[in-house]
Image (tube, rainbow, N blue to C red; front, side, top):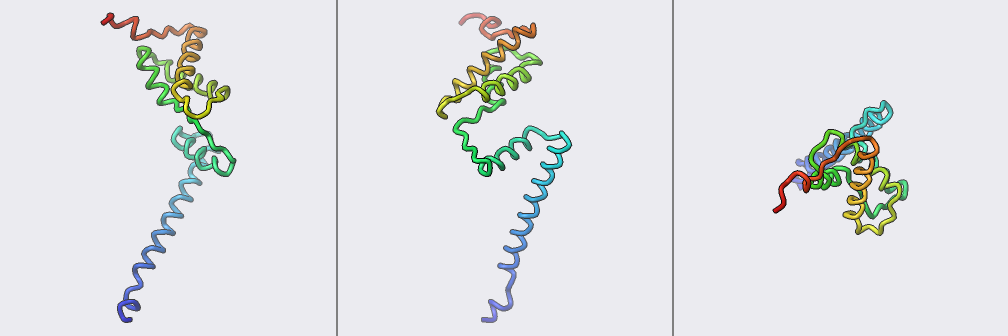
Length: 138
């Protein structure tokens, strides 16, 4: 009995840790809200807000089209160009608004976004060079 009375630290430590965790998460959400309100939201924080709101908004996306994955795949097709990230981001936005896939077609969505980015480049007089045009045939 004396060991229980003399050591209240375990439950107190857990309670303090829980409150610290809750305060940290609340502060992070508040910080993201301020960044959103002032127009200084980073890509990472925008994704946090979107994921935080998915359940409350009733969104259950089966496919998430990631700009970075699509850009990585586009860089396997095209040589590096300064406008490529912007073109891919715009193309992913267009595909996301038009896509009606069943959730397992992420490769097809990325491929379509890359094709749209190539069309955007052609319309804005940006020359994207394919690696197949640069590298000698094997």
